[in-house]
Image (cartoon, rainbow, N blue to C red):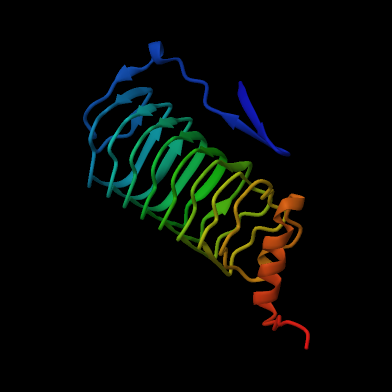
Length: 222
């Protein structure tokens, strides 16, 4: 069993041995299991009610993939492009994403459990009704210019991430660990941030959020 800890969040990670995996190049209508997917292009593929389990995916092009209903379980995804992908009704469990790109992607009704996103790009991504059903962490990720709505991400770790121009609407980050993250131009109602963990160096960003949320007028004294 392999785990990693981010702040107070402990995540159960996949433990794959490439020598035990079979090379996979084609995406058929069947589930993909115990595969080594290296440098393939499945760009624009349509997946429905399909599962990918116990796979290591490296340097793949999954851009503009449309995947509706299914599961991603026990997988390692490294240096893979999911830009413009649409994932709907997917369960992602015990997976790690490293150095992968979700630019402009759409995640709708996605359930996360024991998932680590490390050094990934979610800029201009749309997350709608994404929920954390267990331990989830984002580390060193770019989340800027995205839109997250109706998400339930209580207690997740979002460490050393870039929130620039991220808009959070009707979503919950209560109890989340945001330490080390850049909150410049982060837009969210204050209720979404109940009980979050911040560092002292982030207090100025919190002050700005409070001033904007309460429409406080700040001016020089006469």
